[in-house]
Length: 346
Figure 1: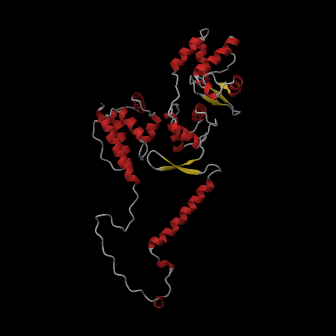
Figure 2: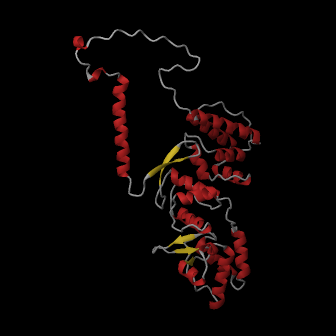
Figure 3: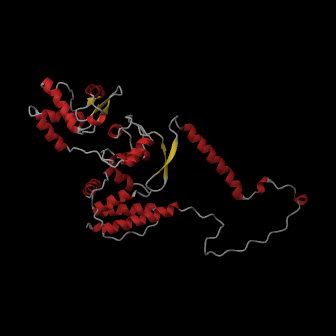
């Protein structure tokens, strides 16, 4: 076990202190973020360096699975990890407790007798009570309520049509407003949550909070693999499917793909590997969206039109065995790779 994690679980009471203690564990372990990610993966957890950096850079409670992954990577024993998680749950429960109204004694506190009520003063003697004689708390409540209403109306007016915000629970027990539809170009914690769900389902994607082309590619792949409408955008149906997804896609490693390509193209194995790498990065689940909105699928980037002509659905197109076999059929007719054009930028 790494010496840095032999210290007892810290006695902290706030989310910020909890995260600071996790930062201290990582720092004293001597491991870089990348090394932590590698050790977490070896232990059966998923914790990319970007997710780790985000978690340790915040002052909110991290998710249990990321806490577990970090501590396991640093060599913490299972009983100690459970104590860390118990502490996290205690802090989370404390944060979720409603604040006790002021002026009402808690259980066990002394109760002071109420002051005697004085006799009412005749109205004729004082005149009507002015509005400024209201209790101070009441005078404060009205402006605050008005400000809240104005703020809500302002936020609603600034949102584009269709992007109505709705709260969604996060891993810390709090709720964050998210658009009803996530799409390319968006950035923030809602996208970060989507990327974490995609990665948990077995689709490797940068977890950086930016909905870029890589995230779009993975969303399309997930939709195709789960027989959903292929749109590249994420709504509640997609999020629910990600939540319920129990089967991760079977991914071929680059080494396995290279060997299979060399076996299927013995006439020119090096060019077969180079071309597939240039087209898709040897990523069998790669989906590219072209300028006209059409898509290209898998290792050899077969177009929507080609799939329609071959009578193949998109799920099949993402199967590396089928994709390589279809490329071999084309090569058998032409005798070379002239069907594809790809110039590597490297």
